[in-house]
View (cartoon, rainbow, N blue to C red):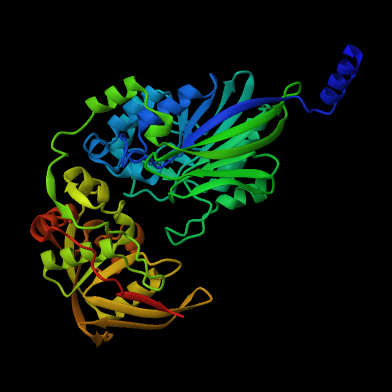
Length: 488
């Protein structure tokens, strides 16, 4: 019997079937959500999952940790860094929201991080070299398995940066990969702040091309930015994983390597919801997170009579009740005919019940003011047409839109202001948030209008009109949708 077992063992070993298992945990777009929300999420819950797992693992993040809640915003990301340090993260890359406080605020973040920041496509403008605190890649030893992690930063920061520049990601990856392969790692991971399907931002990202160009050389791609959950998706043999946002989930990637040669065999992933009742909380991390809470965040501004969602329940309606309501509040505050609200700026739905300052900050974490201007009908048509597909980037108050989607192109577009069709040479007063109005992100069409022709309304922000609306209109109910309609 012992001889039979020995022969079987030798046969299995020869076939390379004795595998070593290594675990990688991945998060992305945590945006300062330190605490559970509705019983799910937070760093203490993540810490409990890590404690319940294997002793040796790799903990990685795909960026956008610096802003999104009061704690992150008011500390310019430093409280996020403190908690990530406490959790023992080993590497992250640079997201677009790491620039919410301008590029001068990036260095303090880097100086306080106790783990690696990886970005192969991120250089100093002056020197053309990597900043001192950033590396293109790092090779980690995880219980005898060497895992190379190459970082790729998002190329479109929320604010224009003067100190740094971004190079094209695929050539940067090619160069880093060549250097990495000289060190013969067992596993190659790409950590990137971009998503496999970037419908949210109106573009198709390059991420899938990583597998097409480097299939067989890159084993795993860990993405983010678009707040999607992607599990066990393989392209050309490369595993793609995305872990959602706001620290509601963590991805657990199980990697198998040949126990004798170290050669990569396979990888699979699973998403773990951070439901506190199921996974628990680490007490020390929970207590530490409590010490980081901002004062005054439990102040109640009003009440929601029902859940008010960002997305309409009517499929052909491309505006949502929460975004419609915010746009209405903005138009009332600005006194203009039209208000343009960027849907991406609304980060959370409103839940039924009391609404606190923490809720309003979570809904709109940015300190955007309101800017107004006068535009002609030709500009309105240009703005609307460029923002409808593949998903509507804006919601409007005072303006109604109908159109058809024919093979991914806008057809039969009709735009009405005050019930009348928009005329090319007619003048209209319009307001929007200052980030969009001065050309940030999806607001790039507003760069067509000179800044000298824009007027910033003093002492008014999107969040202040939201809080005022809660005070004066409670209990708030969802408004009817149908301002942007896609006909079949």
